[in-house]
Image (cartoon, rainbow, N blue to C red):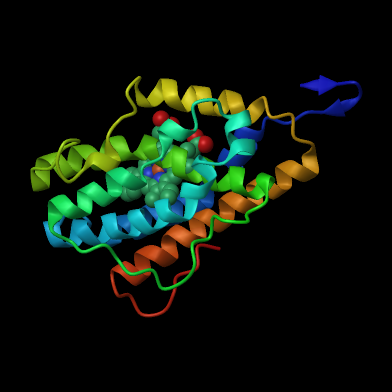
Length: 204
Ligand code: HEM
């Protein structure tokens, strides 16, 4: 879209295209870790998810972000991940470093929220696997993979509309994309720690 002589890019589209390679590598990493091979292996995945949700939790509760995304508070999944760990009998993981969320400036934090919200789309597939292979569901053990009440597609569409309605200039959008890249990388590191992999993977 061209407005008053400059090109206004869709932020959501930029995020999707500019992080597609990172998503693909993360998807491959998750698959290689075989999270549905056993409940114990799945518990490690949920522990990483719990720590990632701990990173983004302050953003879900933050006024400036809520002003951009009206239904933000209800989208948090930290409590669901915690309940999953309880269901599975897995102790809450002890964080190895500080939560990344507090103090993130708004453009970058929006990228972190994009990664967290977008992961609910792929979670449809993960929920199915958790059901078929481990006998878990959105009421026990796989609450953090559950669909939003009004459906994954509708919740995602509203989030994308909020992103695109945020009116960010191109340089601010660059910072949102940088935040999303950092969030993908963070998830990979949390997975590596949770599965006791040697070293920390780079998705770059
Ligand atoms: C085996 C693991 C995964 C699979 C199979 C998977 C699969 C998918 C699929 C199929 C979509 C697109 C859904 C649609 O367009 O309707 C998607 C979107 C997305 N996923 Fe994943 N995903 C996985 C893991 C993750 C993880 C761990 C994260 C982040 C922590 C993540 C972040 C995202 C994001 C941000 C999107 C939105 C892309 C966009 O449309 O802008 N995914 N995923």
